[in-house]
Length: 281
Ligand SMILES: [Zn+2]
Image 1 (cartoon, rainbow, N blue to C red):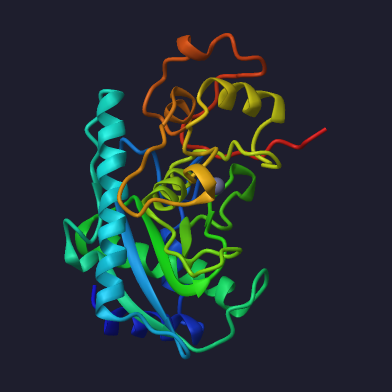
Image 2: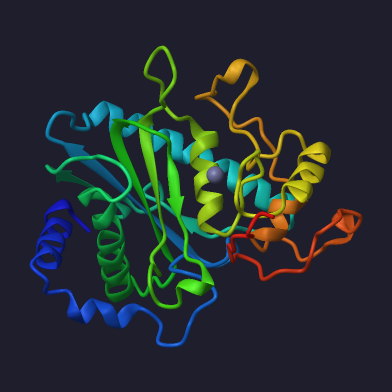
């Protein structure tokens, strides 16, 4: 899908002509959103978003694509550790799975117009990939040449048919660093794992009880959903040194084996690939 086509789709949606697109949402509640289990064939579509004041150069785009390849290579290696041959497709395998597009509104946070566009944009990508290549499991990675904390929007069962579409927003530069710094492949792998149902394990997360999270990170201190940093809060642009632990492997459906984890207090059998927030006491 080229840039022009996607932009046209976006313009149509902005004009409110997206009624047919709504049919894509499953009529019965799907426990998963547009991205399913990591073991299912899944397309990860990259959108390089230009802002008026900051556009992607071909060199930066190529570098970011290389970082994405490193993340995917790592995910495939981790999959093999659990006996799975992952069928994840990105722009590396299919150049049509990327586009460069522009946005000229404010970035902001929270309720900004940009945030409200991501869902509709992802919906449009899903529709086109479904129609053109029968690809039913799709997530979008939005790459922003801006400073911010990367995040992922995942579907939760209580949303029913709202917010079905799943995407990650990857900021090119991390906040709170003295110099602008690329996010690194570990951040990309972390956000992609969220798309498949992995939950954060660091203090203050809202996905599972803190007691359970602490037990997991005590046992797997290099777990990628706990930390994406190396020593000194730096990120590597060359490799991922973190681990995809049996806990995260279980959450994303790479394994259904709870034996290694059975002594963890508060661990319950849950649907793989489904992200459910737990209310904190
Ligand atoms: Zn996270």
